[in-house]
Amino acid sequence: MIPSRRGWSTGALARAFLLLALSTTPTAAQSPERAARGFAEAWASGETTALRGWFAEDVRLTLDGRARTGVRPEQAVAALMPLRDRFEGPPPTVARAESMGPGGRSGFAELRWEARYRDSGTPRMHTFLLTFERVGDRLLVSDLRIVA
Figure (cartoon, rainbow, N blue to C red):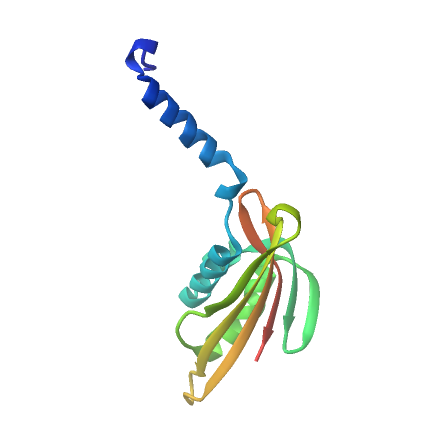
C-alpha cells in the first residue's frame, strides 16, 4: 500500500529521495580495495564457487611463468586449485589497490600470501597481481598473475 501524500512528511520524502540517489550513484560501485579483500577471502575459503564469482568471463591467467588468455572462470579456478592444495596459510593481505581508467572502470591490486607447504611447513611468499574490469557495480578479475 502506498501512503497518501498527507502520510509523507517533507523530511521523510527528502530522505527517501536522498537514499535513492545515493544508492544509484557511481560512488556506490565496488572499490578496488574491497574487491581485492573479497577475492582474498574467497581464496582463503577454498570454496570454488565463491572464487569463480570473482572472475570476469574472459581471463588472462599467468601461473609458473606461463600466460594463458581467453580462460573461462571455471578453468581459472581449476588451474588455481593445485596451488591452493599445496599450500596453507592465512588469507592474502592487500599490499595496494588502485582505480584505473576513466571513472574507475578498471582497477589493480597486489596481494601477498604468506603460505607454507602443507607437507613440510616451509614458508613461501606468493604475490597475486590482479587487474579488475568493472561489470555493473562490481570489479571482476580480468587478469591474474601469481608470482612466487
